[in-house]
Image 1: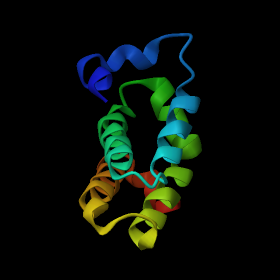
Image 2: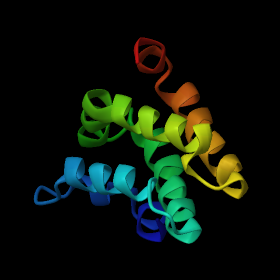
Image 3: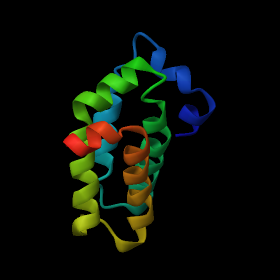
Image 4: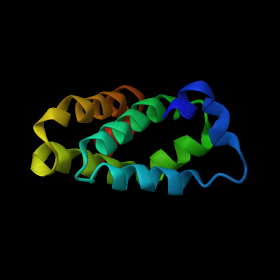
Length: 106
């Protein structure tokens, strides 16, 4: 998360598998440890605003965003601790703000 905040063009590295990083983040949303879930939520709230400016990120979100939305809704629906709801809400807000047309399709 800190690396993404300080150096968002990290996702432009040719040898970085953005899809794998995205999928790891989605899996981390389902972990039982609150600090892990909180960090993963923070990762997505930093990543999603970059959809328009970093093509590899936009492509991965376009292709895999539905899986992210499903994980967020499952967390809100009861899989995650109630103390984490604000963090999941931040992801929904970022999806709504930066990926609105896709969000309505998903």
